[in-house]
Amino acid sequence: MRDLLKRNRLKINKELASYGSRKYFSPSCYADSIVTLSALSANLHGKCIDIGCGDMPFRSLIEKRVNQYDSIDIEKRVPDVKYLADIQDMSMIDSDSYDSALCLEVLEHVPNPCKAISEIHRILKKGATLVCSIPHLSRLHEEPHDYYRYTKYGIKYLFEHAGFQIISIEPTGGMFCFLGHQLSTIFLLPVWHIPILKNIAFWINKWFIVKFFYTCDKLFDKEKIFALGYTCVVEKQ
Image (cartoon, rainbow, N blue to C red):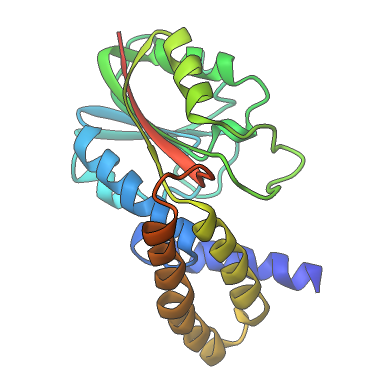
C-alpha cells in the first residue's frame, strides 16, 4: 500500500503540473497559491532565477513577466533545469546576476539556510527582489532532507542578517488548511490510479474539502497563530 501511495503522489505531481490545477490538490495548496501568486506577479521582473525549482509549476506565469527565466535545483525533476547544484554553493553563477528570484518551499530542505540565503543575496543585483515561501506547519516530507520549520520572526532575522530588507511577510493559511491538507491527501492518494474514480474524487475534493477548509480558515483563524507557512518578499540592499 505504501508503494502505491508513493507512486500515486508522483502521478499527482506530474498530472497536476501547472499551478492552475495543482492549487486544488488541497486547502494548503490553494491558500498558498493565492498569496504566493500575488507576490510573484507583483515582484518578479527582468532576469529571474527559480531557486530550488522542482518541477517548475509557476514557470508559465513567470515567463510572461520577466525577460529571462533561469532555474537551479539539486536534481532534475524536469529536463530543462539550467543549473544542477546545491543552492548552498551557487559558485557557477556570477555575483550580481539577477534582477529577481523566487525560492518556494525550499529552505526547509537545506541543512544550512544561512549559507543558502547568503548565496542568494550574492547572485542578486542591488535592489533585486526575492519571493520566498517557507512552511511553519508541515508533516515530514522528502525525508531525510527535511530539516526546519520557520516562524515569521525567524524569517525576518535570517533575511535581515543576510543583508535583505523585509518588504512583507504574509501567512499562507492556518490550522484548518493544514488539517484539510491531510484529509485531501488521504482522500485522493488511494484512488489516483483509477481513471474515472480519480476525476470524481478530485471534483469532490475541490468543492467539499479545499473550498470548505479554506473558508473555515478565513472565518475562524484570522490571527493565523497556527500559520501553515509564510510567503515573504525581500529586497537586496
